Image (cartoon, rainbow, N blue to C red; front, top):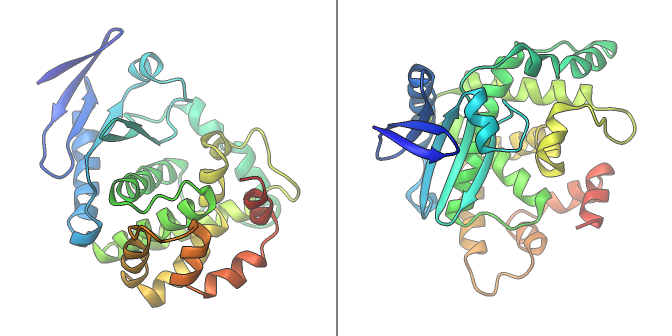
Length: 268
């Protein structure tokens, strides 16, 4: 089935009860592969965290992307339109996009940290990360405090991978997070950093937040997001950080010890 999206964009459907997909012409195979990956994550999601509303995946080639979005081609992102939350990923990764990561590769190399794999792998993993963001939005785990939201998304993504039996992918995510920490500039941020174009929340999420989330996930598993969900849905929950600290007191000391992240919090 072909759907006319507008402005000369025609997307085809790949129906599924859990992970419906719309894709550009010629991207069916990649769409099916990503659908299978995300479906494996959905299938291990606890019932309490099942999202309300409609989640979908869009797999879009460069021409359709330019007509539909103003964001740089190829960097996965999540958008919300009414009750629908869409995760958008690229149908293919062009050399121009991959070269945008050259400065990160160089900076990490200078401190003796090589990339754990090809940039294509990182971008594919980021689609899964954005799917975890969509789940968090739909399940009531979103606080609108960027720092908290990115921590929760990273935690949820790692827990979904582990629960789905994809521990090796979980290790790959953490390897890329360590690389991103090594590639971070010593002072401030680098305007040429391709991850930075997604916004400060995502920029932080791909670095130290994921590593701390992994530490907590190894001891708390599903207990942390389930308890957090129960606390966030209470009418008298209080502020986002207050609720987070009440659910997991150890995070308060960690957050207080941060520098760059504390500056982000001060600007919220």
